[in-house]
Length: 244
Image (cartoon, rainbow, N blue to C red; front, side, top):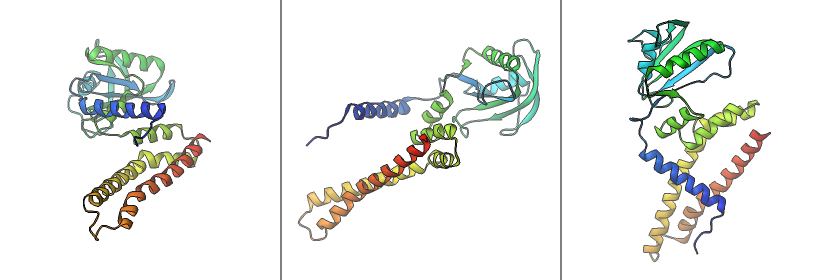
């Protein structure tokens, strides 16, 4: 008997298939360089402007006048307008070459003062560096991290929960998922299902063999489903905790 899918199941399945195919076919060789304020709304003491893409190094060089910064080390620098050379701010900056970055691409950050005028002038200057440089869309850094294999869907969901966490229990649960707790369970479950499939195929081919008993087949087949049920109860409780 063929399994029946609800409309929700079909839509979810289609989404997963589309994401999987897109992830396999997407590369970062033609992607534009993006930038955005990643530290919250101004005004603030500090505003972190994150840059990601193949032109991140060029952006950093044009904005600071530095061509050889030490990777992953903050340095104090004047921030200058890439078009006119005008001093915009004095701030900290950092260069992070890919692929060992959040997005998997070359990245840079400018830690400027968080006044609206400072931020607007820096953003405007970054846009002028190259035709490939543009402001990031909502969630685009995380999207690139996913497409470049730096995060999976469970980690992205955990990160979203972590950003919305308001209590210590919410923070702990969200951090577990962001760190791969749910992904590791799915990987374990996948192994169990592969083993169950092997047991079933062996039973169909060699069912008369005394070495393959009904107990082996039953235990090997239903154990993964028992673990799924337990996991669903656990994560349903988690969702209730995050909601309230």
